[in-house]
Amino acid sequence: MTLIKKGAEAWLFREKWYEFEVVRKWRIPKKYRIKELDETIRTHRTKHEARMISEARKRGIPTPIVFMVNLAESSILMEDVKGKTLKEVLDSLPIEKRKEMCIKIGENIGKMHKTGIVHGDLTTSNIILTDNNQIVFVDFGLSSHSNSLEDRAVDLHLMERALESTHHQMAKKYFEWIIKGYRKVMKDYTDKVLRQIKEIRLRGRYVEERREK
Ligand SMILES: Nc1ncnc2c1ncn2[C@@H]1O[C@H](COP(=O)(O)OP(=O)(O)O)[C@@H](O)[C@H]1O
Ligand SMILES: [Mg+2]
Image 1: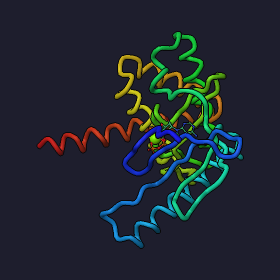
Image 2: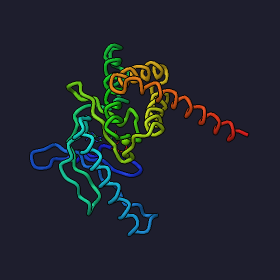
Image 3: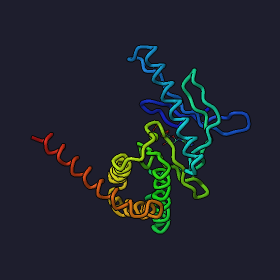
Image 4: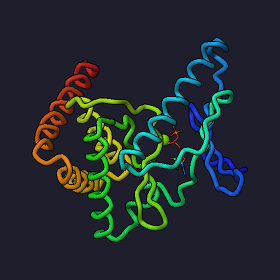
């Protein structure tokens, strides 16, 4: 068993489960919460995430296979997706490949939105580029069912923000390519989303200005 990541909410391990290489996402107990409430929260989030990962997969969005959910310990056993996070690799790929990957990501975000799911935490750490060139989405803890323009725009806006903070020089280009892929699926609706994103950006700026005063 090896530890992959110690996050604020969950720890991730790589381990063997029967003949499978699996990843266990374990939501850790929080000491500062009342025990019963903490268990309820962790159980709820674990159930929700496992459900959403499976549901997205059923709808054709690449996500890990969920093998088992252990509600007693608040953990999800899922397929170990072999590869690296986009955060780690994107900037070192040949430029044509980067474009291809971004378009593919955009297409899949479009597919997600089209089937009524918003991811809720689209960052380059939550997208894995596999050793055989597939992209896989993980971390559905904040995902939800929605068809609203606002939720879809927020989803993409967060992706853009994440790109700006981790791949700043190329962020604009990457996002443009993602939108190119998104448009393949969402067609003219994409323009509505882009207008909404613009509004969200302005709203953000307004809040920042108010904060500075
Ligand atoms: N099924 C998986 N296969 C391989 N790596 C994974 C898998 N799920 C998560 N990871 C890795 O673990 C990291 C943290 O998982 P994630 O679900 O994003 O948890 P957190 O909520 O702490 O961000 C991911 O960024 C990814 O590198
Ligand atoms: Mg994550």
